[in-house]
Amino acid sequence: MELERFVARLLAKDPDQRPASAGEVWDILKEINDWHFGDAPPIRGPNVATEVLVTRAEATDGAIIPLRFTTHRACPVCATREDPDAARTCTTCQGTGQVIHEQITHKVCLPAGLRDGQKVRVRELGGPGKHGGAPGDLYVTVEIAD
Image 1 (cartoon, rainbow, N blue to C red):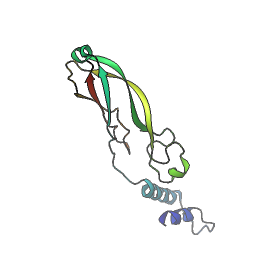
Image 2 (image 1 turned 90 degrees about the vertical axis):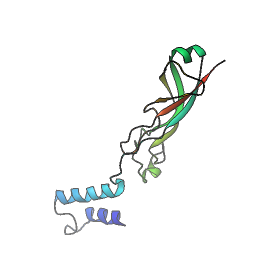
Image 3 (image 1 turned 135 degrees about the horizontal axis):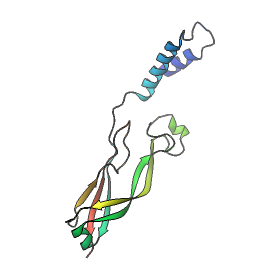
């Protein structure tokens, strides 16, 4: 395996087999990092959907409501690395980079003139992005109480 070769070279007991300079060590560590994490492009997070029951007055006039919903959040232990080796070490997310099913409450501004079944998009309240990508959106389906 390539990684084993890099590590063996860095830890070699024979000075002739070790890197000759700090620059060479840097190059090896950069190769290990690039091999392990790659130069992955940013990936936008997943969208999250939920429903809310509002009064006819709230739907007609608009309202700011507290909305409780379930979403994925970045793991507080290992962030969004998705390190395959973290599956053995991160007991919080098992290496996925996300904590699943976190309940959060957020104030959402509902515009005036909503109809039953209409969806309202709240930008960047969905699941976390990967590799520096933006979070997904939250889609709220409005149900009007009779």
